[in-house]
Image (cartoon, rainbow, N blue to C red; front, top):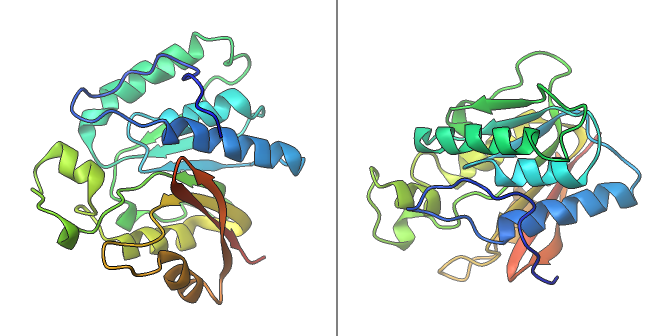
Amino acid sequence: MSSKPFTLNYSQPEEYRFSQDSVETPWWIAAHFRGEKKRPRRVLDLCAGSGVMGFELACFLSGEYPIDFLEIQSAYRTHFDENQRRFEASNFSAGVGGRFRWLEMNYADLRVETPGHAYDLILCNPPYFEVEHGKVSAGDFKSRCRFFIDASSDELWNAIERVLAPGGEAFVLVRTEDAHGTSVLKNLERRFRYSAAVEIAADIRGTSLIRIEKKS
């Protein structure tokens, strides 16, 4: 996949700049949904940061679907608000007012709010590394972006399983082998063997895009 410029001029923290993965992943997902002639009903941008993946999806996949942006680090809030303002001032925003919601919380606490409000599309660019794989500081903004500090990777998969609607799809960027050579894909296949199908859907600039489709 060739590199393309960002759709919007996104606001982001100086301490941790988002990568091209956060743009090319929603492009790929939007193309996948268009190819399947589907539109999501409810979307969750999980580990949203400043909201780039969710806003990019909204730019490239038409529809009135609402998007929730879940992020635990409050430092991202002002950047999210500014990016929402820039999106709403762009040519992509016609007829889509009021569809974005910021959820400042730990994904370990995420639950379906009411029956029928599960998400049929989740996109996620989480931390890539476990805390035992590097020197981290729990209070450091950059460390919290790169390592599973606020909640474990297992809690991430638990949250996805809880709030993904039957028949829904989650797309998560992962490194398919950890620092010790453990196959993340095989572990996920075992973990979701009764509830969902798991596959590598795409390679996004050397990072695997895992697709989890929950059984109906």
